[in-house]
Image (tube, rainbow over all chains, first blue to last red; front, side, top):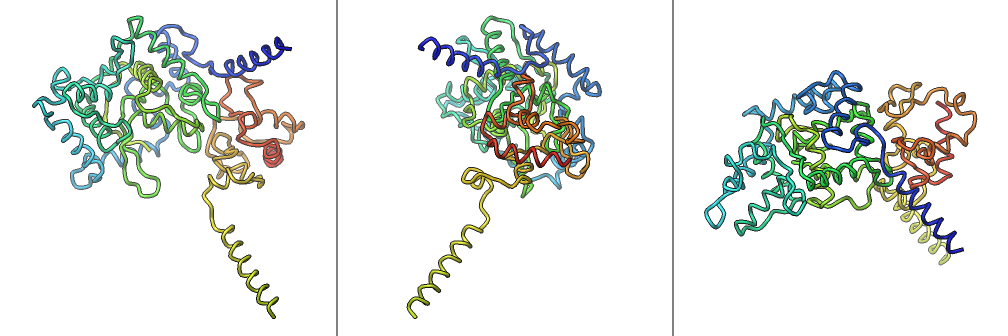
Length: 297
Length: 125
């Protein structure tokens, strides 16, 4: 009887586990370069019209109306007379935070090479403990190294706008995330497992939408391919009713995806899980130019 | 006389209660507090079936918002056996482990009865 019970429990466990991974492009490959190559081959086949830097435009590649709407907003962003207040304020606040000297007289620019220009393109990194350090975490580490209070990762009025401004210093720099040491490979694999694992009541993985079904239409929006997504964060997204803009960082967007597939308890910002996922995710955009503060619906 | 007053009072209270229940409630509360039975709502609501998110309705292009799943077309001819359609909505991962179709029944997004209602509803397409 005990053996039977054990068997039943085991088979349930296996059942739950077996259903977890979605086998689609890139899942079977064992190394980082092979994973990226498999994904590139998949998108070459499924969306041949998207080439090179166009991957940064994500879903805009599939919908003329969405691209025109996006261009309307991004034109306004650059228009001195018609610039949305939230856009101007976000960059001004981010700049003020970046430039405000610490109590010891140093500043963020002292924590990064070249005063922070191009710095964001090398993040996330893996530290000596095998932990993933995102660019936002490096910003907080800089504050703490200079005895300042770190910023809350969910506070878009501080961390969000600081990230926006600090990443803009790297606009145009091509992403170059390194995966070569054992610790880096382990972090990549952890992130990769999360990417292909089903989650939430709707039992979907990131890969379900952004690899398997990328380019197809879901509730009248096109699904962007996983390659290129990280390059344009943080983004400005409009409120559905008021059309006012909000800053959204990459990990806040991850939580949005998790809520959409009805995950009861989304992973916390700066959690090991989301940092690992961001590391895997950013590696896939290696070679693409950063563009902080894009407009996205 | 007192009985009449009581009846009027009771009537007033009942009307108030009715008005309260008729007041618009947020969708999320409605979903969690009571089991939805209206098949059109089950079919369309994005907290319930949300079928239109992924499936096109060929007869009704104006309803179409997605092309991820197979389109609803000639449903009666394609599914003479309702149980097959029910099984797909309940948990398609059994037959197709890598499908994006959510297991609405297994993960308790919908009850078996609600899935029956959706099956009957989509057979019209």
